Length: 236
Image (cartoon, rainbow, N blue to C red; front, side):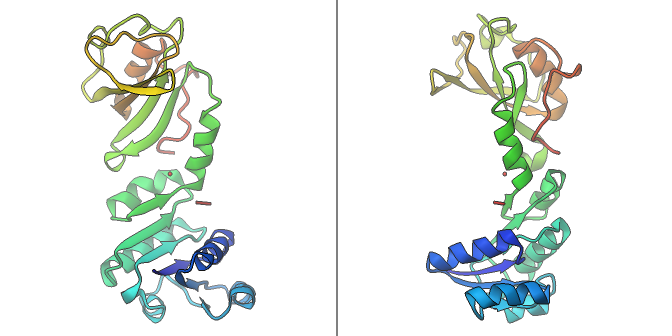
């Protein structure tokens, strides 16, 4: 597979090395001359001292035959420009962008970037694993950022404990999706009774989260109890 990597920082450097080790054909574009020479001294002539944001340099790198263009610079704007150029001018089948600011993810998706890698979101997701059970965990954005996949853990004192889905007053735009109980996923059915220790996965619009928090956890999340880590603020 022929892959173009744009950005010769640590991410681009190690990504290029791993792709080469896996047997792929790779070209790395790095606009800083000194950095390009450093990498070329180790991996050879596959490194081009070019600015991947410019179409002529992507053309020189053979973007018209690339299967993947991965833009992994430290600048979100540059990464977006590279992916737009690759997709719309060279018909590259798959574009991958590193997104450093998670608030830019919706824009990247809207503009057709095929895959978004957010180091910030990945780290925050790991941090969320240690957040107490009275928090909502934001797992992923869906639908171009309009919806979120959210996890709520039912505690002993949760309003939802001992109740069925029909007993929970959820606003339009929020759906209880699946239940994790005893490390096993199961569908949420009308006869399901929520138990302490259950993890409920919901799909919700952002504006519905306060009520979801009240119904499943017990507060509205506006007094510091709810964590908004991760959503709308996923390889490094």
